[in-house]
Each structure stands twice: as C-alpha cells, then as structure tokens.
Length: 91
Image (tube, rainbow, N blue to C red; front, side):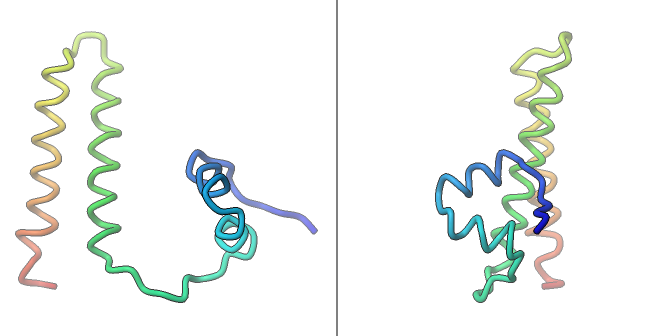
C-alpha cells in the first residue's frame, strides 16, 4: 500500500491534534459529513493571504515593519470589502 500526501505544517498540526482526523483527511481522503459555511473558509483565506503578503513585504530589506503593516491592512480591507460587502447582494 502506497500512501501519497504532502507533509505540510497543516498536516503535522492535524496529526498532533487528532490522529484519527489526520487519517480520515490525508489517508482515507473522505469528505466531511457536516457542512461548514463557506464564509469561514473565505475569511480564513483572506487572513492567510494577508499574512503571506506581510511576510513577503518583510523579506524586502528596504521595507519597514510599519510600511508592511500599513500595506497589509490596506490589502486585507480591500479583500474583505470585495468579499463581504460588494458581493453580499449576490449571495
């Protein structure tokens, strides 16, 4: 039996939290039996991409932490506004 999955920080964290949940998520690859509102996933994606942008900005030696924080706050606000304010009527 050959197991194929990517070892990532998320998968290691899931294994530490619950080996059973890890098994069903990464080994069995079964679908969850409960639905989660997509708003939670979308919000998490916006936060995740905002943090990625912050780290990327900080890697640039010419960028100060204050500037990076300001830019990420602008990015987060824009993404949040587009997802939850502009598209609210469509959902």
